Picture 1 (cartoon, rainbow, N blue to C red):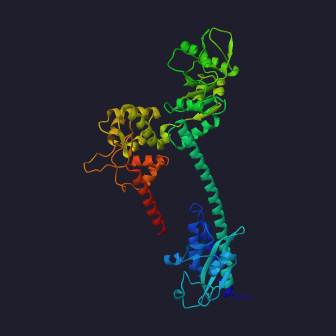
Picture 2 (tube, helix red, strand yellow):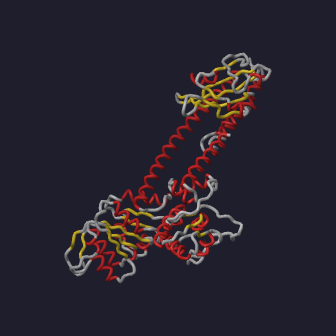
Picture 3 (cartoon, rainbow, N blue to C red):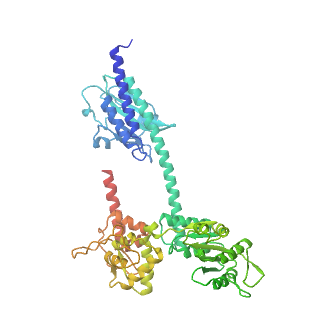
Length: 533
């Protein structure tokens, strides 16, 4: 029979085991699912609670059959660095290759023990055991859990082995789950990247400038409905590019060779607008002129109730009856509408026909404001500056700090306001380089008041200040800077703006293309070396 003292001791060991497992479980998921913290704590408590010293987790490489120590406790960096094993090399390699446990009773005498990480002269005077177990899950071996143990430990060997089996099983399951999650994440990231690249290439093909998520979402919706005949309603603030999107929808559709006609629903007398849209007597209106193609109603909320009823009848019958005539003319025309108003509120207020609303609201596409796509501003600035410089035979550029000022502004007039602002800025620029102070001064004259917290005034210029940042180039070159004048973060940020175009990025950074390649490769090597240390 087991004595009371032995029973109490076993209870103490069980409490320690529960403590170890509790600490490991509490720290799971603290590293975005990688479990680094939990595994390090596990190895630490194996040593401190049970005397299972120099614990290490050896994991197989993803690109070959070899393995290295990834996690350890009580080992120096030099010892860990030596922990590299091929299959069947030493005890660790044998466990890795054959997926079974090996217990070396006395490693000072065991020929299979390599003494590679902890060399024999570093071992304690007392006899030391080495226990190595496979880390496996779902018929796959991921690595090895191993540790040193005093041969004459006060704790029973079979208890230590039972605990290590539990921990090895736990680690195997964690690694299996993490690997699967990483694989799924990688697939999703690859799919998202491919989708983003596809949408970016499409946006470039259509002449849409920008790569922000809200813009690419609108481009994706545009692609989805381009080849259908469904009526499309473009929603968004004034100046967000609704006419450009309407033309893009037409260009991307099967009607591309047919007419695209725009009609403005505001700023015209009711009778005149009705004649223009529906025609009168022997004169065809815009609906008939757009037959086979696309008719774009800009600011559809501007139609009067009578015009709304007449347009609804056209959509219901696919035919139009001219004013003053009883003969209906069949139509094959796609209707695209746009508004900055909330049509649902207009319907509730009785200002817009509900049946017409549901006819138009077949495929709504929301165009983001410039405030929602601030990351596109540098690219838009580069695009507009190129056009403006070319049209005016100028070579005006903006510093990066000036572009940052533009990104802080609210832009109530959106892209249209940005383009007009840049035209004014170029017209008033005395030199070829515009800084953040000049941008702020001109923006402060805009009708929209500046909020000092969201649009801070730049610090005064000091004579000793050196030029900062990169510049958004026009169509001329400027003197190049030193190759070491930019950090890796700045270069990668600029490459992102340029969608990976190194020639354009070099121009924006004030470097030659050769300097950019040299600087980028040098910084990447330095970063890789620093991460290895």
